[in-house]
Length: 388
Image (cartoon, rainbow, N blue to C red; front, side, top):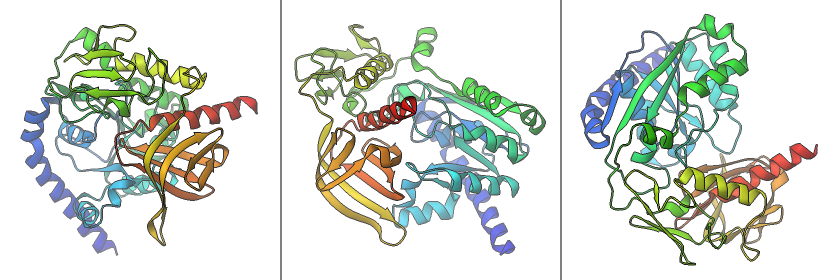
């Protein structure tokens, strides 16, 4: 078994090096990417912020192609033969969204102790509004017990180049660099809260503050299209689900309209200057039920699947997804929010959730803002905690 493991490891290292040279110049050219590159001298845990679907390219170039295993969303392991090819080439570490991350942490630990470097995108999901969110609290524990150095890596300009909600690539600028390196001795001398605070500080990125200090144009003819996957509430009519993007404009059925500039900001800048301000407002409105009385959290053309080791992906129902009181309903199936232990989003169109130890996927056939269901579930969880 040890020989097989070593053979796999050597193969991964050689393929990784080949891919590094293959993507190096195209990534610089396509994304306008620059980096302050430094190679890894020993097995290291790397924690990076998460802004695009291809952040591993930016980290790989920023580490001069030093062989690294990356933690990736488990949906890439459900692509049939493509998944098998990806696993054979680079063996990413699966992170199953909508579940606990214990298995992922154990696999990361085994890789580190076997003498390999591991990179995790600590926030768990790429940003929707250009601002970083806090990392998973368990990251600090992993960093301390690994006995390996910790490097923090920050990607700047990624959100405006390739927003999670958007279509295509905006031609602009991305920069990546190692922010700090912490030795095993330093980590042992720090508390878990201190480690998490340091990581959050190091990898924090605010696209809008950066644009104020160093304005960069991000050129695209479709810079507002698909923004309805991020924004769900109109500031004029306060109806849910009426926002949509068309070319460079953000529109509502009520007649509300703003332009999205090449700097990512809105024009006119009232009521919001950027998507982060709009997002903060809509989340507060949802939490306080401050929206049009006849609005509901619902979306048509949704498909429900159950995922299991025995049956794989099993379709259960198709129809309209509706948040009805404290239940998430689709056709004859309903999930009580109190019984949903984990809920997350994969890319733009997929909700994954764990309910009573069963794992489900809800997929949208067309662009929809599924974030509102995640926000509603989190609001419910917070209300239970506050009431306890």
